[in-house]
Length: 216
Image (cartoon, rainbow, N blue to C red; front, side, top):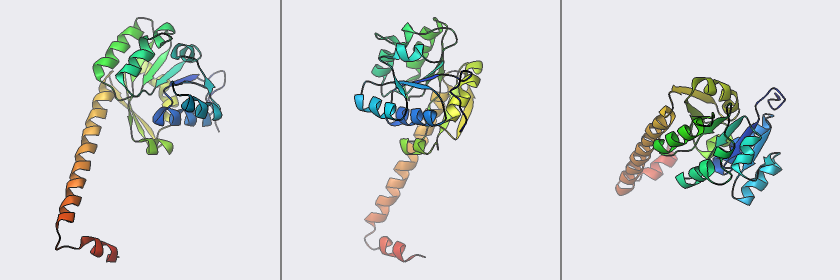
């Protein structure tokens, strides 16, 4: 195992240790990174600490102990609280800090946070995850990375530790736009598959289930 958490490697913080954030944090720990985590749910923190992570009392403390902060949050309200609330990232933002936003949130919300953090010298990257929690468990997800080119290059090794690929999609916001397109395609395919199954079930004269079982 490569030790990416030595004195020369980036220190990582993960804010949001739920289905996605908790799994990517465990992958980072397994890869040798030093990871600090924060979540409002004690059970998520307990699982993270049991895997070898270090708990932070708030997002600002997590960021203060890190070079790269990964955000995996469930809502706009949670995101706003993490950025500007008491103990939020704005209290610890500084030049050289890279914040990687991986949630699926409105682009205008991310852009507002990008501007706020930039005022303190920190860089916010827009890097949504394409894939499910089950896929992330096996590192079978792709990251759509967008934003400042130098910061993207710096965080790519971190993102690679829990994915099968990091796709550079250009300027800030392109990651979210591509994620919305991907989500639309998934929804269309799911609806089409459901319609096909309903059509098959409605054909009372066609015992397709029996035929399927007998097919070699």
